Length: 333
Ligand SMILES: Cc1cc2nc3c(=O)[nH]c(=O)nc-3n(C[C@H](O)[C@H](O)[C@H](O)COP(=O)(O)OP(=O)(O)OC[C@H]3O[C@@H](n4cnc5c(N)ncnc54)[C@H](O)[C@@H]3O)c2cc1C
Image (cartoon, rainbow, N blue to C red; front, top):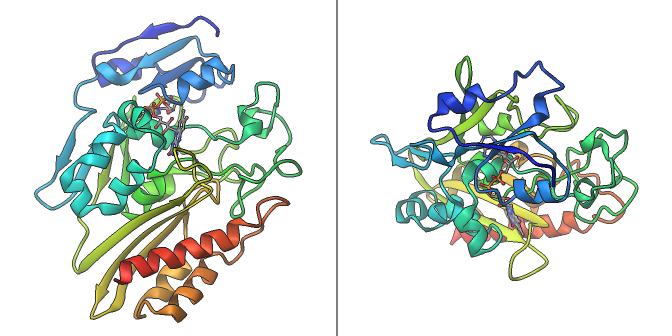
């Protein structure tokens, strides 16, 4: 591992001072933000990144706070651990799918250490990206090796020119909750709907997965109050290993029901696309329907419309359709 300087700022302003200007393309990757280190330390050890400076965010006060607003909203600091999101009673009761998604991440040890901000900003798990010697398109090369190679775990929706899937479990749940990302830069704060925080490889830069520039820090996530009606939600994840593993497919579903019929819906898929994949057509089609077998069949097909599997990941289509049906049935009862 290359030697680096560890900077430990005590304020957000001091942390921002250490960050290189976004237009300085040479210096851009010379500084990395460190939260729980569960992803970044792996990247350093595997020589995927070699920054000159690490900026430890953990001494900045306030970023580890969970706040329940009087209006029913929820504000989570970027340093809140996944274990706290999983275990806090009020989150389990009012934002069930978020607690379920946080609890589905990795192992207890990783959830105790890993933070919300780090989970949302973690880098892809595609094994070509993670292989030190594979200079794939995500690392400045010219080709996505997964496209014509071993692509069992890669994207079936929204892929090209890179076919990574976004690895976060928490991201689809937060998109389904209409959450907003609060971002601080040297010139002030901006808020971005989380759905627009993540970027497709065909938009913006293929080297990044979100809208953050090198001079910005994700500070908070704000989840609005669930709104009128009787809302229920769930996060279902399918993985190969029972102990802990990244998802092969995941479904974040949130519904408000009125007399047994859907009033409003959010359906977001994980691990099938380079971003949390919102199924707006399926959400609209759900409105006014009873959650019977016919609806489950129709919605699960509609949600996967346009999917283009690669050579080894066609299984993700029936798998995801089955998971959507399971989630709809779960919330119907
Ligand atoms: C064995 C293993 C299994 C895993 N399984 C899963 C899984 O099943 N599901 C899942 O979702 N994840 C999984 N993960 C990923 C894990 O959840 C993330 O690595 C962890 O949540 C990252 O959080 P962290 O605080 O440790 O981030 P760090 O490693 O400190 O940071 C991760 C990245 O985010 C950036 N970053 C961190 N905080 C901020 C911020 N506030 N603003 C801007 N950038 C920031 C860092 O610069 C770095 O690039 C797994 C990881 C491992 C090692």
